Amino acid sequence: MTGDIDRVLIGADRIAETVQRLGQEIARDYQGREPYLVGILKGAVVFLADLARSVPLPLTMDFMAISSYGTSRQSTGIVKITQDLSQNIQGRDVIIVEDIVDTGLTLGYLKDLLHVREPRSLAACTLLNKPSRRKLEVHLDYVGIEIPNEFVVGYGLDYAEKYRNLPDICVLKEQVYANG
Ligand code: IMP
Image (cartoon, rainbow, N blue to C red; front, side, top):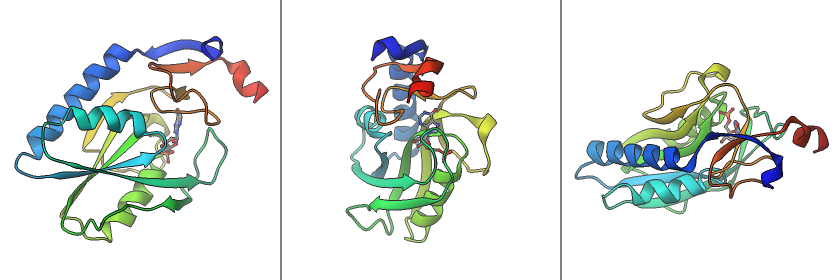
């Protein structure tokens, strides 16, 4: 697996610092409330597990799974829910937790979908942001690190379901895509 890596873009230490900072920002903004964190499977699982432990407030963790139609390196924004939330979010302070916002189409769709369920508030937190690829302007309340237009894997992010368990965020060798 490590033989497929071209280079480390963001190392585990920088990821940990960023997650701590995001956790502090959320704790400051949600003082006295109980945020309802919604992790988008599967990419946000690793991030959500660390983020939740860096927010010193009572909170709820829930998950949604979606499948987007498109090739594995490109999303179309046409999204199908394959697993819904386990609780009603009406009146709750919901924070969508994403691994990466690229075109913005997935997050835009999710925000519209959850907004209809009448949460008290609806915010978005992403570890990575690729603003150069945006197709839909979508408001981000908490942003970890802006990255250039490169496809990355690790810390939850995959290529063809692999590399999610890498502790660093990495760029793969071009030949991995050519072979796969
Ligand atoms: P968007 O709808 O284009 O913003 O894409 C969001 C989803 O595409 C993310 O939740 C990821 O699952 C996937 N994605 C976008 N860029 C990358 C990347 O660089 N590496 C891995 N997955 C990505």
